[in-house]
Length: 88
Image (cartoon, rainbow, N blue to C red; front, top):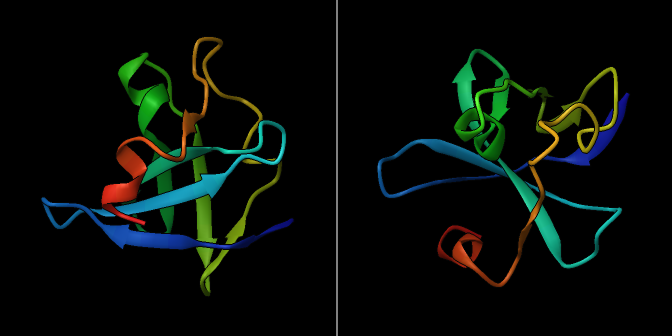
């Protein structure tokens, strides 16, 4: 399924970072880092010891399930007015 345009930037370490604006909690977003190929992993889930991966094809987020589903129980999107402003 297609979940919209991939908003990708590079962080200070020249790593590819993707921001997915939450549809369920307006004003927040999930951040994903490029892991390999077309795959991006949720940064918060990585810190919590779980992997939540999405795929980007032709500049679009594609996945079998919604990018907001399948995260670690303690993974929550972060407010867009925090650290995300450095990149987006």
